[in-house]
Image (cartoon, rainbow, N blue to C red; front, side):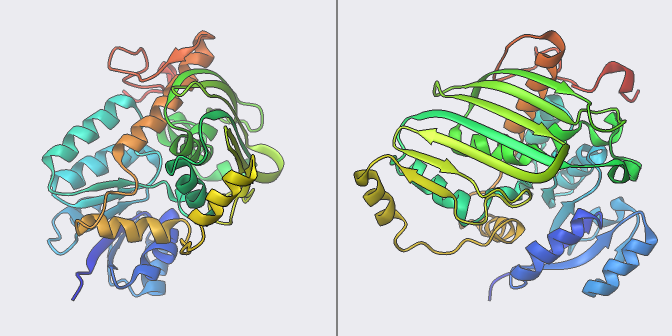
Length: 361
């Protein structure tokens, strides 16, 4: 009989989506055995909705529950680091929402803690999963696409004043950044997942849409390690909402579905350069098996990794790569200079990209 892992979900906001999309469709693999939230009303509402008897307001209570195998951190970003470190120290497996932590220093500390822990850590990048992105990935990994030429990523979303009425949003101390951290981080992860590592970043950030501390508009020019070029643009001031990723390779051009919060799900536009390439793609995808999108597949593959039947579908190294891009963005925008990656402990923003005036003492 296959083992079922007991999960404690911390934070009932996005945590509810983890339950609905991730754990319930994988009920033969996971059971949500506890819920933790500072809001008693939300705590009881989710507990009643999903029949979760253990409801706690104190995170530390979860660490001493021997039957809890996985702690799923869905709290505001400013407390991710302390919770992840405590859970790893307690030997728990950990799932953590984006952004994993708030600095390169912290992500390096988490990676060291992973080495000492009996638990596994999986950051959340649920946009990676679905038929569209996985077919593109399969074509690239098979060598059919050829040399990458250029890519564009547009994250055009809409957030107005009501969104920022939630007290922790729009503030450096609690959200750790703006559109780079909470929104475009997903399409940017898809981009590097498919196009590889970034070599240089020239970026700009601005606050144009809302009266908030953090940025809500960004743009950048990238040079990839492969030699390919790319541009990234995002705003929270779009009239409509789309996420659009277009990648041109030697033999194939891909364009994502434009669904803002699930661009990896539906089949992408795949444009082969010639009949030979088209035939190779057709043969590769001939017996394609449907890949459910977002949390359903990420949690299923996490289960396989816990059982030793596969690699973690998202790793702390993936999170570090995304946070390097964020750090480079902020540094480039301030200095008006190109920033070369990777970034080490000698970088000026290694300990924090949060402006000094907003750092917690």
